[in-house]
Image (tube, rainbow, N blue to C red):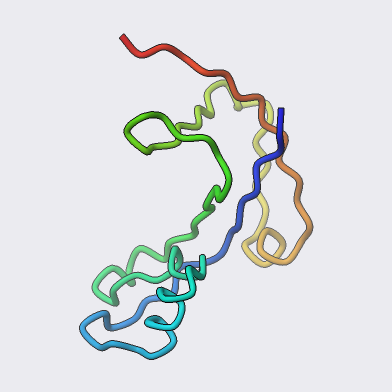
Length: 99
């Protein structure tokens, strides 16, 4: 099984009614930083995102990741540790038939 490449970061909230040149440049270059931009209207959410960049998708273009049964694997860490440390995620992926 090949590895999954993911990126993680806090969402940056901007006034999306304004065309920031940095956002336009990122769009034109296919820069994945766009996954972390959201309108200021949602700023109260204080969102953190992880984006899988190389996962295989189903026919409708979505990538599904089930995280069931992790109660004994969960660790709570502060956000600075999470964002600034080297972390490794090992995932076992199985294709499932949807009926």
